Amino acid sequence: MFHTPYVLVVGLLVSEGVSWQAVGEAVMASCGGQCLGYTEVSAHRSDYYESEMGPGLRRVWMGVRLPDPLYPLSQLKQWSRGLESEWMRHGNRQVNIDPGVLTTYQLLLLSTKNYAHRIPILDGIYGEVALIRQKKQWHPVPWTYPDYRTEGLWLALDRWIKG
Image (cartoon, rainbow, N blue to C red; front, side):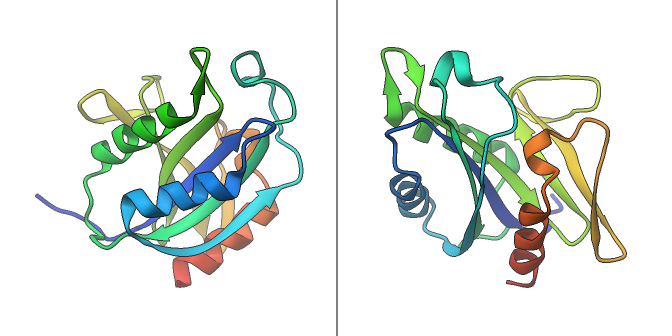
């Protein structure tokens, strides 16, 4: 089986009253990786999660170099779902943890939902290229989420890729 080393990018979306720092610490404790840094977007750019998680959501990304750079992609999404369950309240998530894979040429997001632009990976997990890096610049694709179209994230990705 062929594997390519990568940096884990973890998108955190947290409800009001939940410390994203505490979630970040839990992420690091559970994966045992080296934190390459955090970046926060001033305001979440979609209301998709508000019905479940409430208003005032905060969006933070973290870069992580895993101790095993060949960690199977399908297990990353399952791992994140397990962590999310630690912050459930009244059957609703207070934290959304989205793992992604950062390589020199793209940011690949992992999902449990299939769609036309998503590629099956394994065990009900799908991958989608969300950003493409060409000539040292990040470029969104038509289905890139609004939160991922921010220069602040792109600058962080560049730092983490050099990590």
